[in-house]
Image 1 (cartoon, rainbow, N blue to C red):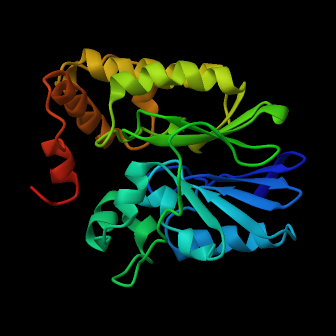
Image 2: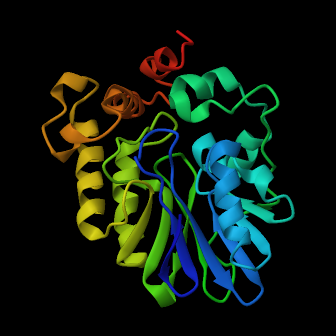
Length: 270
């Protein structure tokens, strides 16, 4: 269901939260709607798009916080909207999708992703903060990937963090940098006190600080997931992501920007 947080700002929170079950958001301005992330396949983006249409305004813009399919897979549902994303997102969406990888990553959530699965390309590359509308600002950041976006709504005190925040669900940093991600969360908190994450319930500074602690714990583990210190993340969904995040952090510390072998095993490519 599309929940109104304040007039003009709505969140679509998928429950139960987990891999392949991301959140999305909507900002309504005088000229129409800005959609932030588009969910995975038609079974998710369809109902979400219908709820957006029911608001009665044209969808002018789609902002993608990450190229990962659980955030960008539903772009075809919004065929007439401009698509905003980082250069990395643009490059990834220009490549064909391997449905078998999404099935491995997202399980039953990817059941409707088949050989005909397509995404729309990015039409507007964002490399600096840009005032999208009177209400919404797209802000480049880094961490979950080398290049992410978030959308701030300063007048409402809300940041639509998308892939940059995951509350109660273990994030997946196979293309990102846990250390840089942790540091970038300080800047994210400067944008607004209310945070709509890409996974899990709406939060604020407390939830962001826990995520930050987790990412730094991944770095401190020095490549050994058994050395990941205890914390709230012990009870998070998707604990199998820990080993990928720990390995990725260690590889980057050694100057290796490759995909972690644990990630290749996770998607059946090792």
